[in-house]
Length: 169
Image (cartoon, rainbow, N blue to C red):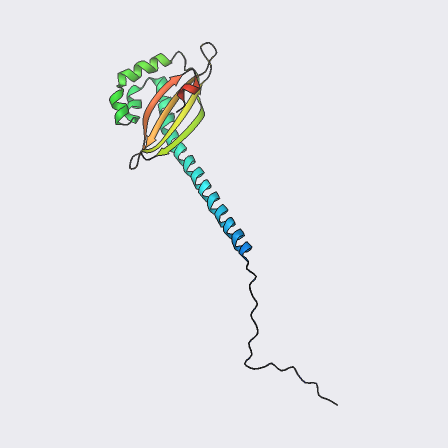
């Protein structure tokens, strides 16, 4: 009877390595996926920054809108930056707020939010719409607040109109 020989492993001979099948096409697809992920991350971060900026600015703009029917010109003036405070006195704001009583009846709602970022800081424009009152026409008030490096949100502009397009920056 013959003995069955066991297969012998050759000593000193290495098994050939399996080649990775990476092609130029695969590298290009991988690079494209990375670029898309980075772009989506940047867009998401930008959206979150906008949301945070608008939320911070809305605290100040809501305070301004709350002070208008109270005729509290001094409180609104304190929310302003240096230029706003030098332009408007508390008495002048009080006079303008009293004139608004005819057209600002009811609770306003935010109808537009615009954010602008530049080298001088970030500015957010909030446009509030009051319900129709005189001549069944709504009235709009635009409140602009700016945040510069090292400062909080400060009121920079306050204006009103029966035409919302006149208030857009």
